[in-house]
Image (cartoon, rainbow, N blue to C red; front, side, top):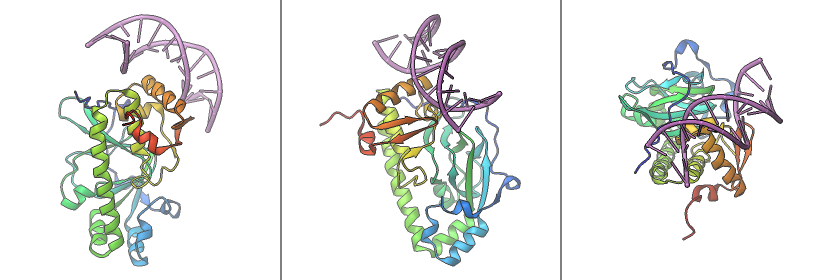
Length: 250
DNA sequence: GCATTAACACGTA
DNA sequence: TACGTGTTAATGC
């Protein structure tokens, strides 16, 4: 019954795992896009700024790859990533998209395990990372950082439970609506705001539908006054109704 | 019937 | 120009 959302990506992917040579130090302009910085004190911020690296990734590139050792805790400053798990021989399973403001990988950093997912850029994106060492250093001394991580883990648990529901939905319109709502999560993805920059093609890859069908679903959502379609993006008008779209009014 | 791919015209960045 | 959107036609399960 489950759709087991297929959806790969269009261009052939060339694997890279954040090559240090391509990265640059974090810049002033980046800092405003990092939600947890404000929870740190001066000394902690200073260390983070010294430690953090930023890299631009091209569409199709892998930010981290299943089986690779943990190096960084990552965050999206700009663009759109896809978290998936390519089963050895078969179609990849897309778990979720990661829009701006999203940070990921703390699970594997915490356990010091190899990455369990592939994180791939759907579009040209800017990704930041701090080392596992600094991540642990922050955990050891900053209550604010701990709160952020805990909140993040809790919120994401909700996301994955919601994702299981989405998988059981048969109505494509509802699947698109719920997947979209997940991307508009203000807690996990504070960088998104009201306007999510995503093409209908990219949304198709995340949801596991064709671009044409996604377009049809979006038109329906727009007609329902839940979103507005814009060039290269979508504006949310009513997040609550977007979350509940397709659920009969019980 | 419904979704998919392919192909096209059109508008926008 | 390159890309994203909206639409139609043919095909498949």
